[in-house]
Image 1 (cartoon, rainbow, N blue to C red):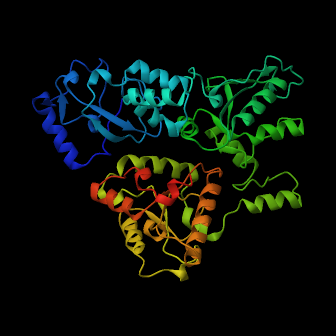
Image 2: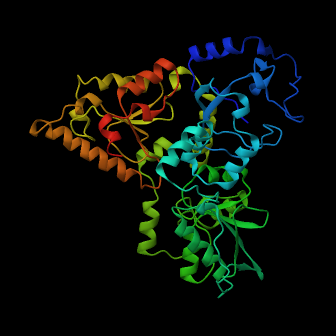
Image 3: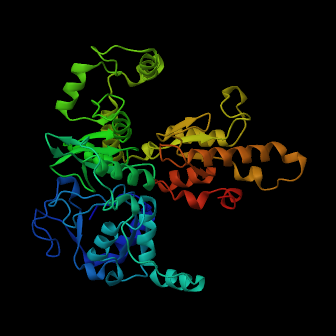
Length: 451
């Protein structure tokens, strides 16, 4: 299914090796163990140093991952692989016979009962089945039947009548795939309009798909971009077409990703900021074009690196950077070392959090002086709020309320990034154990009660 290189300490790895003992054999040559399915082709980086002689005398790993996308059939024969996997626990208390089977994993992925952020919890729940079962019995909840998630379910349009041929080309209906939207109601509205105006839709893109409609750039959308087979268009283009009553030509503001031929057509008709070479402009259209032109500071920063290339570089970076001084390379952190957030002149020089900020920078992270979209972590001193009382702590309480409100507001932004609130202990433990630790274990005590 995957290879796992993070989440455990050297001491845990040493103990695992000692427990397995004679059940490990050196991996020599290209011969694979008999329990590896025929046809599996391992790349050089995928070949282990040792093989487990008998899997039924091995141990179970509890793994947390971001997503389970499909992979090349001869890469991992399980058909799926884990994206950014991390070992959360080595389960010596579980025999291999109680681990998740391939059929159970396949059903979990196909049913899509849970969103990405809950997938790891579902697998953990499987490993702790008896405990979870007892807890649910105490609560008296009914077991919910397995169902496809609403965002992956086709809208029932059996009662929708075709009113126009807006989404038809040469008499044939256009096919759309609504891949990611802000909520399920938008998806239902889009698919209803597609049917009403003569088009068809599918839940997975096919050879007949004309456009993929998307909103947020989720991992599923990005994986389709990497194939280069489809034009990925913001769903606002479809609603604009319905409002105008005609099939509008694509513009840069609509396109999230374009095939080479579509890119060539866009370059022929307009410049990089969407200003048409032949169409007359208006005051409103000029203002819209100017709003898409980045500032000089932003231009200098992104010079020569298109956004799509930056996405590819980020994925490659995540797979290759494994040194101890790059463990925070995906972290954008606000450290509470200012009396007034956003004002570097109010730095508290003797705050113990200054050390945490330096450690984050030293290990590849980015430190900001304000809470803003894109922030992944907020580091606060938990002891600062442990003994709040009366007017003396008015300033601290004020920050606490502002922090709570700021983080809750960020949850509703299009970036889909929910900042994690942690204490300096999270930074220290991650560095000491040489891997990012679970943030929930290091949340401030006052934050746990307010979530």
